[in-house]
Length: 193
Image (cartoon, rainbow, N blue to C red; front, side, top):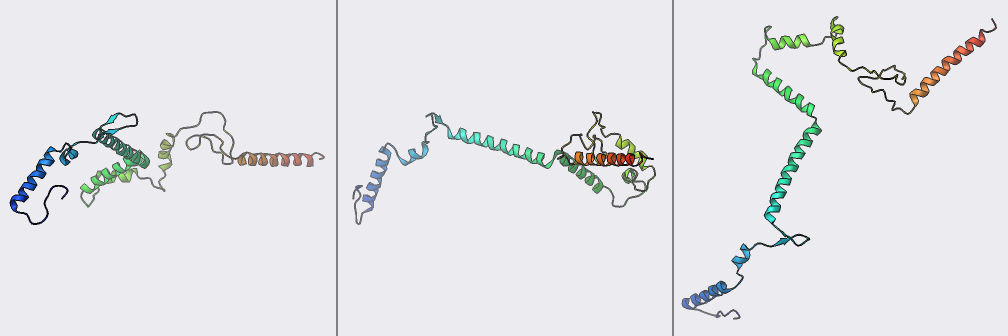
């Protein structure tokens, strides 16, 4: 055969000799399979510099971890930080309530605070108590804002900037013209008297 092995029936001594020759050839070869498995491929970038693949993998892992952290932050921000705080506070309150006994008596301070702070529609003193809450809202202190049909002043809910398409202005002008015409017609009709 081409590699030097004999064909046909062989004795055990001949098989041992053939195997020994094969092993010797493998040892003498300059580039054996084992060496090819242990040697690493040389990776180069576009400029021809050598690149370490392990270093690249580590950098990718670090970048992936940073990206995961960034995504977690964005998910929290998109959910709303205030809403998250409110949920956490609500969970704390629920845990506090769950630790209490099932039955509640008149001596329960939390229940008493709840009933005292609750707003009732038929409470005559509620409007006086609500005035304190209304005073916390900011009040507009700038130049006179454009008029609107509802008479709303800028402040807590509106900044005073006219973002309309001009309908409000036309409506107010039409009303003013109607009133002035009515006054003019009245003066003309009573002039002769």
